[in-house]
Image (cartoon, rainbow, N blue to C red):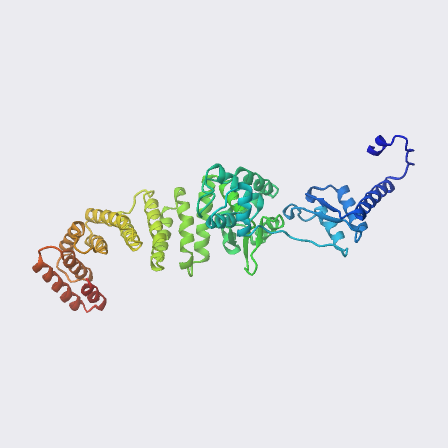
Length: 472
């Protein structure tokens, strides 16, 4: 029609059958492109092929065959995440692959250095290495995701920040919209499974996911296959029964979209599944178990959360991860307060653990506050052992020339409360009190306390206690 408008005197074409008419159209276009490429190099770019209709794909197949070796370079671009089984583009790609001049490239995300260059180009600000690393980790280098996150950071004036989470204030709306559109194409059951997987984390195992969902293994595998076909998740290479979300932000969108009540329930179910699966060797999984049960605390998982988080905190202490241990003990204390009748003795023990972790991490003010609270609580409970441990904890900070009146007071109280019976704890308190009085004029008492501590440790026949009192 456009040609006839320019050349109205052309004779009308003879009528032909529809198939022949389409062949003539396809052949004419192929001839036009071949002639154009003969004059100068020609690149033909076809974008968004995943949205092409069947006639357009038929034209692509025809032109692809006719132009092989004829000069034009045809570049077709499509989103593999949009092309599921049965999509008409798959047949077209198979036809094109039979040619000798066909090459298929799978584009991955930008690497960390490219992310930094990309941010500098779109935002005009060179990001720090830590920020580039955080962006790369949380977007997998997907240019669209990087762009949206950078826009969010720019609007918040945070492009000069260091590392850490770049999404502490929520996901960009553009990312949410794109990811939600992809998720909406999945069945409701598949989305439900992915919600549980999102609670588990970016990586998840079948043996934990199955009890957490309560689905039959065969049914669960079918739903995972649906999500994998949609490129939402992928099997971890070399990891038997392990899957991973294709993008960290996909997992974030799923998790953030969960209503608070459902999220708490799912954390509880995941915690129960982890506890059952790793019952024989829970140590390496205590931190994950604590995370899920603590997240489920408002829903009624208080006892489990306190137990798991306490064990996780003490394991962190053993591994010298003092900051992590302190955070776990603080969260455990907060969880304990949600119990109908919080166990005050357990609370006192947690305060002692918190003091130990904070002191080990050189956070002396926080450690002293925890030990003081523990001492006050032990006094109200009338528990000499807990009172003594609070005093001993305070003594971990020893400053030359300083008399710690709080430490002295707790140790004096503990010594009276412990009575005269021989015990390892009494020996430790005697020795520590002697040291606490070092910069006072009570020389005779110091010597007497030290001698009593050494004699008691020897009577007990305990080398560890003797070493401790000699050290003090």
